[in-house]
Amino acid sequence: MKYWYKIHKWTSLICAIFLLSMCASALPLIFGREMAAFNQVSVPTPSEVSLVDLTKLSVGKQAEAVLERYPGYNLRVVYLDHERHRNIFSLRSQDKGYEYARLDLSTGQFIERSNEQVRYEIIPKFIEFAYRMHVDMYLGSFGRYLFGTMCGLSVIALISGIWLYAPFMKNISFGTIRSSHRRIYWMDWHKLLGITTLSWAVLLSLSGFIFIFSDPIHNAWNEGIHKEFLTAYQGKPFPVQRISIDEALEAAQAAVTDRRITGIEVPQEDGKMRWHYTVRTQGQGLAAHFNKPVWVDASTGQVTAVIQQPWYIQTLSMATPVHFSNHDTLPLKILWFITDALTCIMIITGIYAWFVKCRPNKSNGVSRQPTTTIPPVRQSLRQIWLLPVMIIVITLFGMIAPLAGKEWSTISAVALAIPLVLTGYYWLRS
Image (cartoon, rainbow, N blue to C red; front, side, top):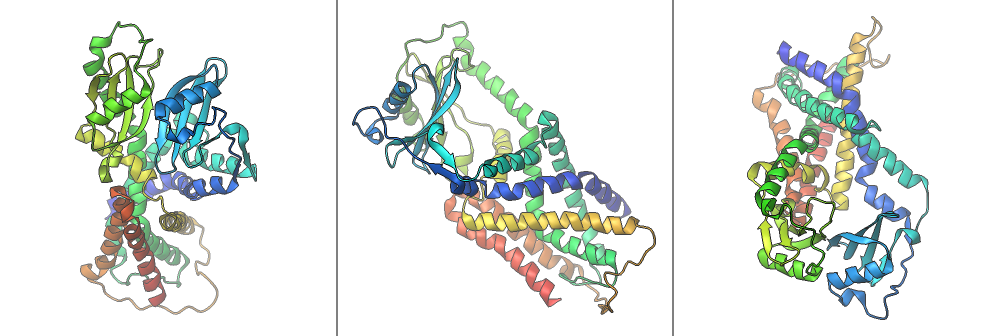
């Protein structure tokens, strides 16, 4: 056990501050969309493309209307936001840079940067600060990979803590917080909160590690796919005469009838996809998180390839939705916020318990008030692990279930609430 103790101690001490920074900065990001929506005051401007209702036009015709609205710009990508009923057009100009035009399909009006206002300037600055602190601490790629390394160490620290849990709990029941000694008091809190947040912290740390360090694997696979399907196009001129966006969408939809289209990338003369439209598609349930782009020849309208990810790329790709996309409803956001806050407290209690141990000999009592000594109660392995295993498994289910679809969000919220309720109940009971 002493080796596990050393592994847990040193990995925890090395990554503690970084993990605390990531967890603390994630707190406002959980509600970042709600904060931005509250702060934003948009004044949509009517379309100036005649009296035609843009919502009744095809995507290609809408794109033409956008280009009329933005002379000098070229269309890059069209994003079809089905959830918010918006089509977003990404534009680029050699002189003016990038621009985004959002067409509200409910009103037929454009929402643009020029007619967006905010109530409080500090809110977007605060969200940006939290985002940068969460991603790289303003250290660029070095900070990103440093945080990825700390995520990996966090997984080791958290899992090694499991091996230490049973020996430390053999004489006390779950939820017991002893106040006879300062270090014991903080260590009891550390163990209790560690079990409560274990699954959440491990899954988020592991997905963060994979998300950051899987880029070389993704890039290598993408390069292989491009060589496999685009070798015959090398040396061909950029297709000036192209099929329309609507024709490309029709060809792609016919190739993947079981998926819906979420966007289309227009061929760019200076890009890798010079000869093709890249149509992005989305499946149902878990398949919604696996990319399956369709490449449509911009000259002929023929489908060159429907890109199917291999199992290992699909596995790595799941890190992104696990880290970002499984808490879209308000109840889940609240539960994630609580669990994240408890993880911060768990880290702080561990740091403080170590700090108290290393202090010079002083009174280690939590307070000068008389304390009641809790008699030891011998626990069997079943008694030690029953509740922790329940909490770990239920939390895992609550985090993974929403990935199967929004219909699982309510069940997921109940599952994530159960460990918090159990922890509070047994703490109060003890």
